[in-house]
Length: 232
Image (cartoon, rainbow, N blue to C red; front, side, top):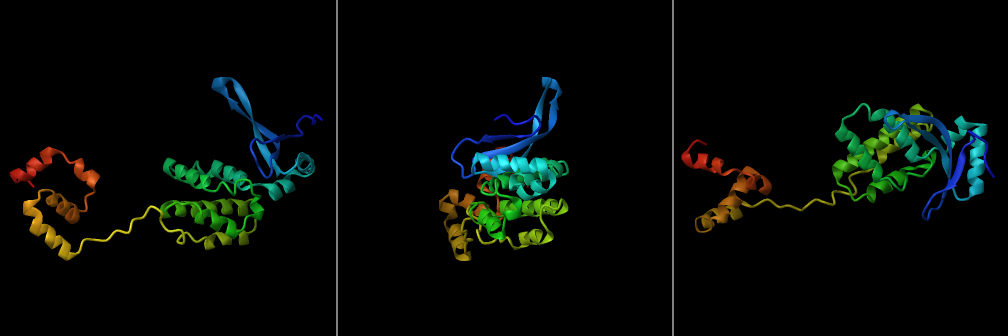
């Protein structure tokens, strides 16, 4: 059955999904002057297990779009609405950081924003496999998205408060190494053996200067010449 013009559409997503049927409606058009084309801007009503459910949701949306939208809006939709505004205010590096944070939240993308609980947010952090700086960015993104959602009455202030309790210290840093500094005894042994092994002088330089190996390898020979000639 063909749906009326401007009513919206229902279609099935590819792949194996728990809710493969999507309902959406065109809410505007984006003009691309250089291509002399325009593309539709869609508002997704939601995702559903059956075609019948998607059609019913679309019918309800057309009857009361404001109320249904906030009841069914997903995490991904809130992210898109929030980021469209926020990304204009921050640097490119911050934008990339938020995009990376969003990509760790794939299990939340299709969830209704109102139904997301603290356990869902915590699970994203616990299973992300990311280090501390990325986890901080994820938590900041959660907070900003919930600020947006409260401001637009998608959720209440209590939902915003739960972000405080997302624990980013538990996963730790999966890329961390358990480094142990050289003891005074070990350093003394290196000095004692340095005269007979030229490579030990390099180790001693790294210990005392804190220079990374890559930085040391990038040193130019003329710098070593200056040191030899007594300019440094």
